[in-house]
Image (cartoon, rainbow, N blue to C red):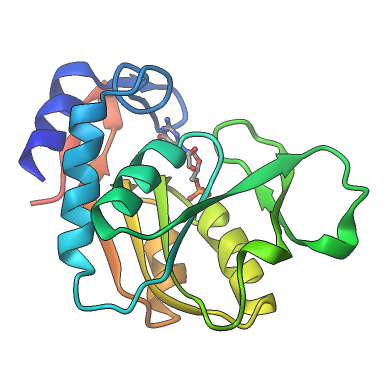
Amino acid sequence: MKLLEDRIRKEGIVLPHNVLKVDSFLNHQVDPQLMFEVGKEFAKRFADKPITKILTVESSGIAPAVMTGLAMQVPVIFARKHKSLTLTDDLYTADVYSYTKQTTNKISIAKRFISADDSVLIIDDFLANGQAVQGLLNIVDEANIEVQGIGIVIEKTFQKGRTLITKRNIQLEALAQISSLENGEVQFLN
Ligand code: 5GP
């Protein structure tokens, strides 16, 4: 998606450990117009799938997920991150190792918001090693729900997230694919 690549080129800052900072339009300040375009693009790419709900993880997945929900006219559920969980009976939970924070978080979704009739699209801001997506897939498996696709705003193709997803034969769409962040420079795939 050219609009997104242009913004990454213009405003993305490469940090150590292969981390791209895009907090001027996605991870802190949010550009609603750009996110709306992102949402419409995901809606187009998954138009043939019978999607009933969108799942994401708080907090940076929420903006693109909500715009996709708006474009597809379906509800959006964001998994919450908890330090301790007391209401385990009513929640699906999974452990997720955070690449940027280098800590493990428990994510959870209330059982009442998803049912076996649902058919979901997973949306997230970044795909690095795939831990966040894997956490959502664990929840979806536990809930016996079908995953119709995974939409990622920015994929770092030099990390192993895609391998994990394609092993499961799930349609994966990334709107910007970054093949390298070496020497502080953003290189896009192709
Ligand atoms: P994964 O679970 O695929 O290893 O990493 C995905 C999560 O880590 C994303 O939800 C995102 O919050 C964070 N993340 C991973 N790599 C980056 C990065 O280069 N930049 C930013 N801003 N977040 C990242």
